[in-house]
Image (cartoon, rainbow, N blue to C red; front, side, top):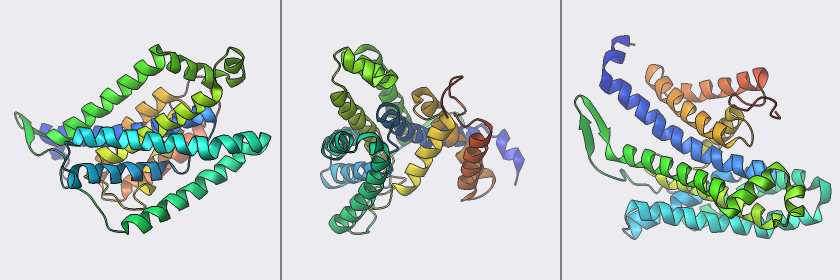
Length: 301
């Protein structure tokens, strides 16, 4: 390994930007998972399949229908939001009402079963063929010796915009304030007249939409096929463990950190080692600080 390569600003900027782009997707996935867990206390094992649905929507939007890629991203977000709403209303809500105190364990099994169903449904509908695109946006932007692809800049910009809009939505809108109140204490929120069941549905839909957008934005890296969500969902679980379960800001920071670490690990070592390092980091954090690296003091593990 020639360490002098790190003196090249082009190499450093490329690695950092590559890590931030991938990390922003991990952050969106982890953010969706954190929202669902923070509001409903559900660990959604079908989160990767929502990513998969988003990637299929993106492929057919831009490769088959020829729509601009921002329209494809928006379509993926809307479609997967609707899927998330249907899952919560059709499966999770009835389970919550009928299973009593044991509903969380039943929901754990439910999401695993849903994962298997969605994977096999995709296999039947689309076969195992990988459907992807080579590049969302052609061309590069040059800053002296540094070349940055328009695609990476666009993905990073969209991810930042989505996080900013989500923050504003939760901070300033009436539904957003209701979401925060429900996350803090669902029973107290219900006493104040908040329709908690509606908030559960909206929160699940938002979490699902974030996963779908991730699948859409990463179509050139992760082509659409039935089990494409397996790797992203593992990374999203790593993100929520590192950032802290239910910790939204922690999920964003952990996603970006994980993406940059993986980019440099892949460059310095070889393919596969980034997964080893990610697993080692998760294990170390669970031992040293099980509540999460970015969790506030006193947060639950």
